[in-house]
Image (cartoon, helix red, strand yellow):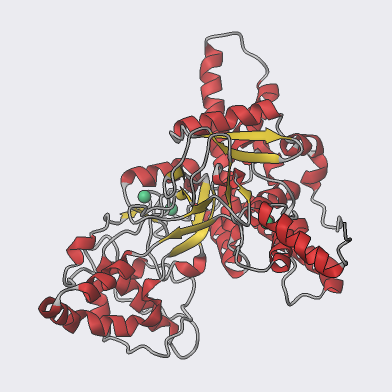
Length: 494
Ligand SMILES: [Zn+2]
Ligand SMILES: [Zn+2]
Ligand SMILES: [Zn+2]
């Protein structure tokens, strides 16, 4: 598998192994203590030992149903295929625009999806004087949604939903933040506020923007990288965000360092540069475990005897993606970040952590609200909303879906009888992870969540958890495992 070997991996072997070296326990503790303080999570602590790895423990009592943790993601991305269903802020992932715009976009893409040649036709009518128009919509992909049971609406109605000329009954009750465009002018990412736009720009988007303001080496190269990710695996988009995030953090640390240096005796910048890169990389270094092509679960349709070839293909795909990313944002100053080994570890981190990004759709809430209206109002409203619902079909309730890395949630260990779960309450309308207690949790008790469907049988559970690289020894598994053993072997009589 080592035939794909990048010259970078050889040239910077030393730096790369330092970046991939596990942090000492004391630094891990310090990092998570800081994080818990900024998250205002007084009730938790992260413990780490070399044998068991990391775990989250209660230092306060939690009642059943109580919020344990709200975890802000380090990086996250909406799945490319989900972008047609939901327009969300690219930084906090809340829905933006209006109920009408959300519905209008969806219907617009459905309309494109049924075009006969199977390719998107971009005859979008430009509707002027609007912050968001159909021509702004990224036509990167076509919807192939199940449209069998839908009744299309006239194009004019879809347009007036998008441009705000048609107002749906009671939609004001579900008002959403206005759409803010990317300051770089890519016309591909949108935000709920200027502050989200600024934070995303500073955190990673400035390097990955395809607009005029892009800080990348070459906008076209960024587009090519994005296109490859959309065609193969959108996990690459997330990996690119991690690399950009690290570069921008590094630049910030370096600027602060240089400012300080002015007031004291200067040191060689070369020595300090790498230690600043290590510091910038720290939030990632607490998360990764294994390389993507080594830890990815073998898909059901791949035969065991083709495993080596499959893993080789995955590695090749990652290598292609990395070459495209290098063409877009490489700089010798932080060259080790662009090694295939580092790229593999970043993607492996997303592969091994069960961290779905989910935000419920206000469009679903809207139609449920209309359905719940008392008799005369309901009939009046439905005269308008029913044809729209019929046009959207069963997909009306699809929420925002993606992948994200939540630093604290990712420290939570699995149990098949967990005492907590990820659960979005009505007020949780953005991409943060929320963890709720399923039962009373005592001081000192470990907080556990289930990575899988815990209703599966013992054998099925162990098989699924093998993909995460461990055998579950929770109470439920110890009991059921013992039972399945005693079924096989005649229990000795005492
Ligand atoms: Zn936002
Ligand atoms: Zn942009
Ligand atoms: Zn278990």
